Image (cartoon, rainbow, N blue to C red; front, side, top):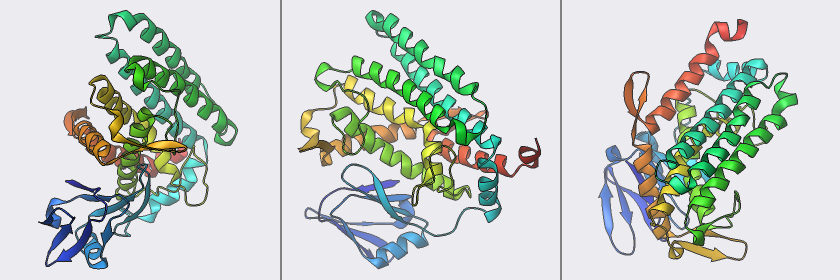
Length: 328
C-alpha cells in the first residue's frame, strides 16, 4: 500500500522490525512488508533508523509540500538496469528518433483527452454538440503534431505550442461542465488560483512520483529528457513521459466536482492562491488511487493503470536498446 501521512506533528521511527507512527491522537506499528511508498507532508519527522528500514525494504519515502509538489525522496540509489540504457537515452533522444518518441507521447495525451470528452457527451445531451465541436478542434492538433518534421531543437517550441493549444480547449470544456461555483480560467500551477487546479496540481504531484519511480526501476534516467529542457536538477524525462497519463488525474478531479464531493472547506486560502488541506487531500487521494488501481487491457491481459506506467517505461527502455532503432 501507499501510506500517506498528513497529520502535522506526526513522528516516524523504527521500533524493532516495524515502523512506529505516532500522532497526537494515536500510535501505530506498521510492518514494512505492507508498504510500497510512504508519502509525507510538511511538519512530519522521521528518524534515520526509520529511513534505513524503508531503504532495506525497497520502500520509497516521498516528501511533498503543501501544494502537492514532490521536493525530495529517500530510496535506494541503484538504477533498475545497466548504464547502457542511459547512454542510449543521450544518443537517441538527440536525433530524429527522439522526435518520434515525443510526437507519440503528445499524440497519446491529446487522444486520451479526446476520449474523456467523448465519454462526457453520453449523459449531456444539451451540451453534446458543443463538446463534439471542441473535441474535433482539439483533435486537429494530433494531425499537426504527427506531421512535424525536422530537428527536435528546431521544432521543440512548435510541439509545445500545439500541445498547449489542445490543453486550453480541453480544460475549457471541463470548466464549462463543472458546477458554476467552481469554474476556472485555464491552468494555474504553483500556487493554484482556484479549487480545480489545486486538486489537479496535487494529483499531478502524485503522478510525478509514480512516473519517476517507474523510470528508475526500468533503468531510465529521469533527468535525461527529450521535449522539456535539461535545466539543472529538472527531471526532464519524467515531465515528458507523464504526458501519457495526465488524463487519469483530470478525470479524477472532474468526477469529484460533478459528483459534488468538493466543497470550499477543503482548501486553505492565502494571498496569491490556495492549497488543499488535510480533508481535501484525503478525498483526492482516495479517488485518485481508485483510478490508478483500475484494471485496463494491456497486450492481451488486464493490469492496473499504475502497473501500466511501469510496463510502459520498461517498453521505452527496450526500444532504446534495440539495434534497429539506431540503424533504422
